[in-house]
Image 1 (tube, rainbow, N blue to C red):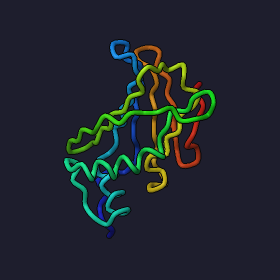
Image 2: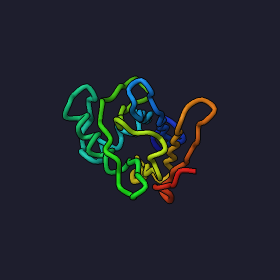
Image 3: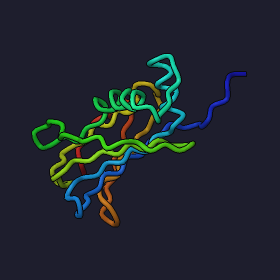
Length: 147
């Protein structure tokens, strides 16, 4: 018998919403901690300690080219890395786009973990309350226009 898997599916969730108080778009990725740990072990042949700045930097270097909010001109909007929060099951990544609104986003690229896990599914929720729109990303569809 092979090694038991921590979970049977590979999924991640990203929430993108406008914060009127700070006048910025807030992006929160919720990723399975086990999947990220396996990815880092595969990429760097060592276990990571998310409390260490150098390991957070490795994660940032992996994520930045794989996730982007694209403007009407097709160029990536400049996301600011705020940090991470870790618990036993999930790792949350916090980003923001100061001075931006949801209407400025033409499309989203989300290829997080799809290069490592063939069945990875990433869901992005845009907006809040009754106005939430959702997009589903896979290895075959890493970039999608906003509905």
